Length: 481
Image 1: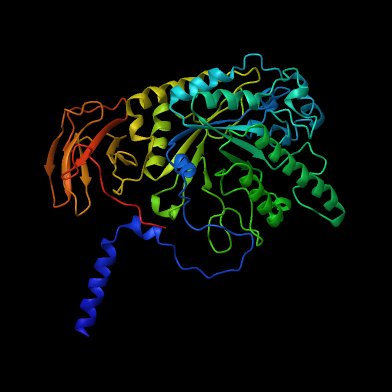
Image 2 (image 1 turned 90 degrees about the vertical axis):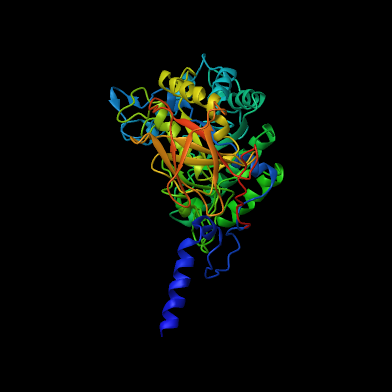
């Protein structure tokens, strides 16, 4: 009996010492449900195009369309929701909204200016709303008259953005809403068999527009889908699955997230077996995971607004508006858990990016110019999160970074390292010759004394281990999937 108790304790203690990062990469055994339209791949994509996506760190989202004209207001009343949804408001006459495209003439729009601003901010990829729920197309689609070509502006906005951002070395992804309030065949749910022919026309229309977009803009690196929660679309598992395969065949390596389609059981994002459908998890909209363990080893990104919930232009931001440092901390937190952070911008009806967004972009860019190497090409460092901030690790140089978002009143940082590691030195990223004082407080614990307490900006330090050489590389290996 005593031997059994001792054996149990040994097994229990070994379990406690096992790194959680290794554990969550081991796919749990699931009851297998036979699926034709579930996940077609388990684990992460390992190709070069997906590796590029994984290394972006920071991206830009742009929500723009005719909804920028009312800007969340109509006849002296403020729409209480997100501005791009104003057509769904009972105070917004549908016929009046549907005529707004005749006023859409963004004379101040300058694609090159937007692209330069994104590059200076440090963005490596961008997403543009080619068509939101209202159905208005920012490209001259031949499948509908409800396009930019029939507005006073006339010029191809999507084409200009693709060209300008690509020229700046920023990869372009196209947002596309499955919901289309303008198309006569669109249904949120099919109430009777009599409605099926109209919805079949809508499905073909949707397919035609997506193929058209990839034909017109072959530089596209991926598609970002919205409005896929409708029951009518959820029921189209076979159609959506085949459409996804067709689109991928047009651009090898095309990246599509987890919200595009459902399986035949009606499951979105994750199929009936719990496996992700798509190339990365898109469930993190205006929220960030509590820790890396909940991600189950999946690639992921977070799309974030500056006000609490405004994507398209709203002339009157209310409530909490995130500061530049708040946004930087969100960016760092995402990268520290192997994710990307995508910041949203909502230009006005004339094509201007609002001053608050311009200010945030400039602040982030200023910080990124000094510290971007701790964000780009970086991810999880294999170290526990600390109350003073976060760790990231370069996938190229192997360097480990300490990003201090909350300076302790003690004037120093507590750092716990893996059992096979010993810290050689810690120094400011900007000053490699200024090593910080190290005080060992335990077998694997250190107190890193800061030279000065700076609370105005997020400080970045480099951690080097003994035996890793001048590169400061850390040989932590992600388990193979």
